[in-house]
Length: 368
Image (cartoon, rainbow, N blue to C red; front, top):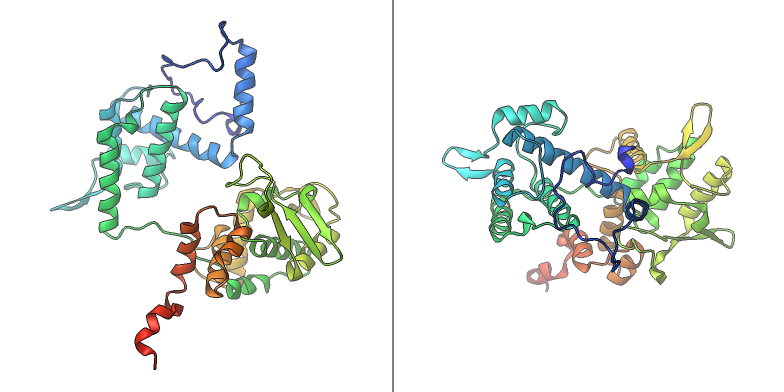
């Protein structure tokens, strides 16, 4: 079975299945065909990105367990095992400086086998994600969950506070605000690739900061022309609307320069149905749809061509849109209607991070 289609919890790791409940109120066991149908429905309703990240986390857990305990991993894990995983991966301050309990030879082996990108402790965000995935694995298999044990939860809480006290804060990608986006757009010529990238950047930014997965999944079925110079794109499925519920904010405007660039790309590539943004092969052949990774690479390549230095990615288009809205004092409801954010706190984080100096409250001592 293709690993990309495998459930993240259907790894080669042997799990105990005691206590696994059978769905429904049937008195007789489900057939193998019914179990397969359940798996297929669960798979279809799961994000590909989520599945990939869960698979990676479970592979890492299995590799660490085998090297640390010298035996294959089996669920349920013990509370002691989970606590050991935390102290192996989280640094703590001692008289000798920052240390963790990960043996050097195990760290080296994990890197050599490709389970880690580099030696040293995991970032706090990665540790939290690995713990969340293992917690989910126990939940899915209806097992006693060691990740929800009081000692584990308290250690994770204190670890977060320790990292914050040391100033080890999460690193966010830099924002591509309008002036930076203009520099990227200036590198897009009238070639087929240039027209595609111009349309992609403007579509992703101006329609509310679309995520790379949303750009890659953009399809002509959801694009509606309004007159000669505007479009409405219906975002039928997104990270914050995974159930596909119909709501007014699903309809994203594509107007002005963004509409003109999109119209030019569709005409040049002769796209009338199917995916909007596609790969261009040698000879100018328009091929298969872009992947989310390809969208990220386009942003990075255009940054490099424009000489825009910094830690930018596809998410920089989304954060750039929100940051620009904050700079211009646009209303939160208007901004959130386009971005699709459900959390006001998340949007305010972008608003406030780049607009502190323009806050009128900071100028009260300077008033006449």
